[in-house]
Image (cartoon, rainbow, N blue to C red):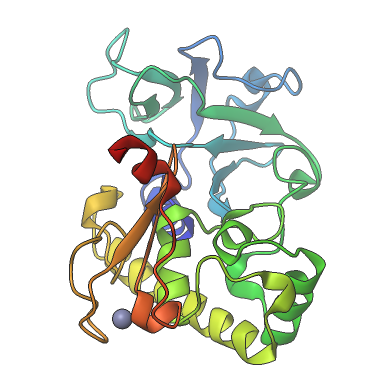
Amino acid sequence: MPELPEVQAHAERLEDDFAGATLAAFRPLAFTALKTFRPDPAELVGEALASVRRRGKHLLLDFPSASFVVHLMQGGRLVPDEKQSLKPRGGVARWSFEDGRALLLTEAGKERRAGVWVLAGEVLAQPPLDDLGPEATDLDPAAMLGLMHAHPMRLHGFLRDQRILAGIGRRLANEVCHAARLSPFASTGKLDADAAAAVVEAIGLCVAESLAYERSRDDMSKSKDRPGAVHGRAGEACPRCGDEFRSVTYTSYRVDYCATCQTGGKVLADNTTSKFLK
Ligand SMILES: [Zn+2]
């Protein structure tokens, strides 16, 4: 799933390319695409795209009277629509502009989870944005420590919970835990000020690295190409200590970590995999 750096760089690209373009039509291509009834997107026809922003993992296309909020979920992409075919593969929604260009929201696979909301007024105070936590990169160590103690849970899950802090997903959670030298299974309720400071620093470093990479590209990267030390590298050597990366596998994601750097040498039980092996 695209996380904070991928969505941020993409918002910047879309704004560079499409800001000022006048909306000629918005058309949902899948019946699940549009998540709101009012305002009617037709009311935005004739307005010029003012800006493209990001909040958490959401893209915001701002027009003077309302904004389109787009959530790409796992396999969604919002890209310039070169062909503008009648039934594009994986098509979810299309924005057509008076200059003849268009933006197409597509979603790979069979799941139809990517969606579009049209919001007027206080956009950030309405669903789906109203229950997001603060931006992950906006927290200082004291605020981070406060959030940790207010939400006692495993660190990896804490980092991924968009209602606690917004923008971090499975990949960055792995990277942040490794960069901070903290166990992904550490209980946030027991972490101290030094750990909170290490997490804040790690988020800054990991996001900056990914953002620099994304900004060097002209389209959103595939997850396997994204930079990082530990995510998806189980079995490879930790660049910091040389130990072999280990992993714990869940149904929809995997926690990758270095036992030497993060868990004091302790190898965490991989219950899911060991069940299969029996
Ligand atoms: Zn290591």
